[in-house]
Length: 476
Image (cartoon, rainbow, N blue to C red; front, side, top):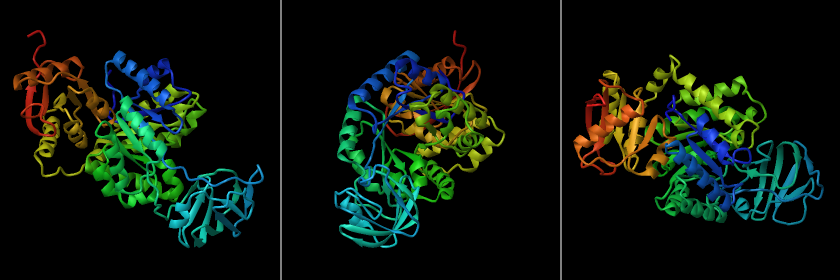
């Protein structure tokens, strides 16, 4: 099934979309990758969903990616004596300590010694998704005295975040480690790593994954943006988790950071996903707001590899309609007269390597000759990623003999992945590329295709050959 768009769609599975019929409908509506949120998924359920997706994949005849999203550390306050919680008044003092007793309007337990060790006077603390804000006035090893900046109601077990503080907290909790091992054993294609603050967080996850799954760093904390280049170097992909990022950053800064991250990811050649609250109103309504349509369109115009649905597809009333709506928005943007100019203006210069030079040349030649497709042979996925990084107007067909590679590339911009046996010779490579491009509806007899590959054939990451071929009559 060929999509009429380049940007990919990720849909989160949940109570509204956890059976085979709905997963098939979500794929038909436009889903390329399914996200499984490990915050709400048992290992048995992970295995069940994985099996259903692979069944749908076999039936549809196209690689489908699976992304397991790890929960990450959850920093929360304790409980209050009153079930209704307490009211924090602007300007009042409020204390966080380690005492397990229920709190009141003067204090509450904060069962995280690492916060006391890291916080300093002047640091801001955000509570209940940023709805309440307090500032540290005194910091001790077991007690933080704060002044309320934004007040309101505070109830049991609300989340707390520290946008000004690098916490000595590992991105991987014990639950995450267990979930990561299980996800890798089951055979997911991508692991989304939460609570990334430093490149070392990504390195630890990569070590645990042992090359069996790609690591996607979720950027949801300001500290991660400060270490963006180092994280890009180690991560296989990037997710802009705007919901959490908007809690710790001033909301008006999030659009600018989104542009910054997308452009950096394109320059590094890393797939980048724009996530959270894209069609939020479709949790309950069959149509999105105009602002949400504009938000999705902006991500597509910026050249994001994938756009993601969360609660809209996991627990919404219209999961398949939400995917179809996102698909329609993306297709409309990609046919807009301004789209190509915006995409081209953001293109990064190729690096001084043979593989990058070949990929850049393939784009230029394809557009000059009005070629029907760029066909790239890729075993590790590196050649496909380089072809995508160029954002060519010519369709890209990625041929791979490795199912895992096809699934991992399912979230990469513009790549139409086909599983095929490795070519046995140069003649076989050209013949196979032409036949698949014709069979999949990309090219007709007499049209030209651009073929890129590594010679000797099957050498990972060694793209060094470009060939222009004419599609023969298929009865010849």
